Image (cartoon, rainbow, N blue to C red; front, side, top):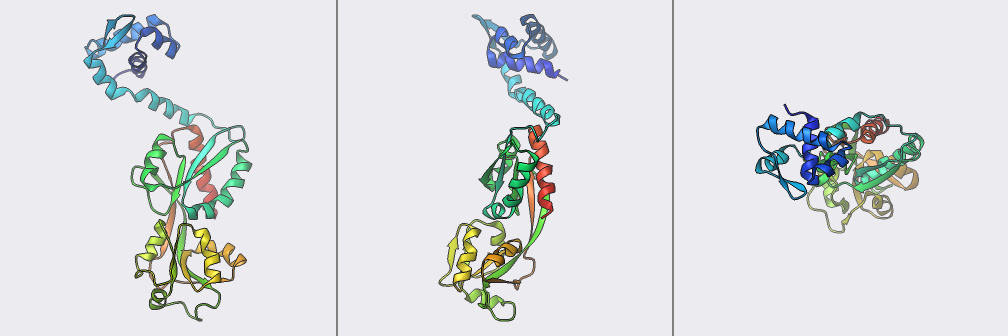
Length: 290
């Protein structure tokens, strides 16, 4: 098994091109670098470098070895960093979280003030969730956390946050005294949300939207549309306490089975930084209280 310190020296020499520059990068003496390169040569049984002017030129064996081990020092450093202490009250980290439009409506009012209280010098960068790139962004540290009801493709940790149910909303008095039937929902013009996975769960059971339907990109457009028209909409029940307090709308159960969704927080299999290692369980614990 190769010594990680030898690999660290080897990678530095490959990337710097001279023993002197590698020594400066690693804060070592040049004789120490030479000794490490010689040890690695004896271990592998291959000549790794040839002199070239004032620097060194990697051999084919060195190039092959570099392709295999180049990322190991950085990965080891990240693993150690994830175990380091993180002090929220003094940190100045910017956390990046990916949310759907619905997630921003539901979670940000709880998350932002709580983060201000727990880590007053930290910032929050909220981006719209892209499920296609989320897993890779989590792995590389471009994202600290993603929240959605559908898992992004790729290797991620899924941490359940909350359960919700889709319901029908309508202007008060728009529907009769009984929950709407499938036929009534099919015949009525409705609001369709583009790109929402939970919304697709309900729409997949419906025929094409009736004449007069409206397609929008955000859930925030729905209450004013429904309150002022005969349009119906299908939304998560968690939105209703705020909406019914501000708009003259009513909710009804949907005439389908299994309109429930489970929202998860998605994180990298291993936290890339100590800040992320603190942030992920903190957010999960906070938002599960909802």
